[in-house]
Length: 202
Ligand SMILES: Nc1ncnc2c1ncn2[C@@H]1O[C@H](COP(=O)(O)OP(=O)(O)OP(=O)(O)O)[C@@H](O)[C@H]1O
Ligand SMILES: [Mg+2]
Image (cartoon, rainbow, N blue to C red; front, side):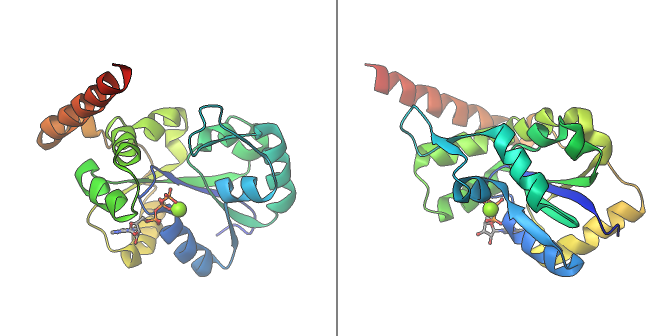
């Protein structure tokens, strides 16, 4: 493994990014940065105007701070890898991007266990169902190692990743919208979100 550069880990909440980042950083003996936590710690966030539990991140300053801090081999865990990859200072130093995917039904159970409210759970399950991050980074698919963690023990993930690297198995192939067993699940989720909106507006 190169001694320098960035490895991204991305995926919808609950797909297992933090779990993997810990394992991979131990294996590679390198640092990992949870980008959202880092931004909050460095005071690079502005509370979202909607008053919801979200933040707007000061992207330019955040990138500078990470470039300062991320010397050597650094794992970056983020929901927004395209923000960094669109910047050549990151892209040209990136080894690969691990994109974690989880079957929306299974993701729903994982997120419920986090104790999140129903709306937040549904929004994130929908984001995964609609392949949101995969779409955001599709142009970088040649450096993407995509892994379905739905039925995978986290301890197997490192072997899967190293095998994929060795066999040059890069690309984005999972599209939950084409999975026939999920059609009803996803459409009833969409309906239930719309139904809630109707109730809020009347
Ligand atoms: N491969 C896996 N198989 C089954 N469960 C997993 C797997 N990876 C993680 N989990 C479980 O799913 C939950 C979410 O994992 P984790 O916190 O690593 O996700 P995350 O992607 O970092 O989420 P967030 O974006 O909210 O930080 C945890 O309870 C974790 O134990
Ligand atoms: Mg996490």
